[in-house]
Length: 206
Image 1 (cartoon, rainbow, N blue to C red):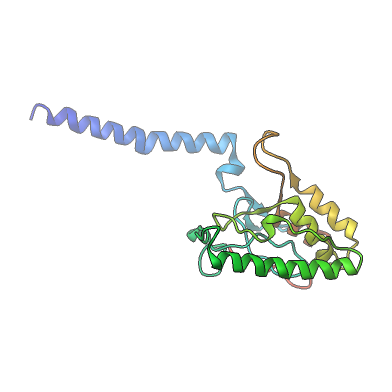
Image 2 (image 1 turned 180 degrees about the horizontal axis):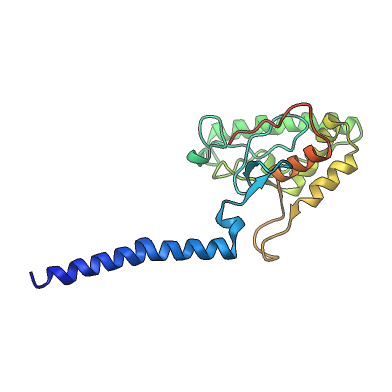
């Protein structure tokens, strides 16, 4: 009995410190120092409505939008509650067949655009390689540039205008040396909508 009281006091004290005081202190500091990041790096449209996060990819399939990397997260992809990749090895026939199919489709599309005087002949690796999380919100500048002619044609905008929008939302490596340059898909599509509103709202899956 002599050890029961101090043991209970210690358990309650540690529970109060680690389970209440510390989380509240960290949350409070985060809201003061980094409120945007602490609240999920949310992106809002022109009306102030939350339309997504800079950290979570969404599905865009219409020709007038920048398309994200493919996703195997959840039944329809881009499911933030089921983040995952295909888990297929590099020699798996299913992965090889899927990449070959996607590459062929992109090559045909870009060949058509090149024939029209606006496309490119190269395919960015991330255009056919899906991310490990299935929620990658960014694409490479090369991937975005290859999609610019399609977007410009669908929106009836000059290619230079679409290229400028993509360039304005291209970020360099973190701290100047961590990672690769990237383009946030949702940010570009919202900027395109603000510049030239489509006839219908974007196709997105949260």
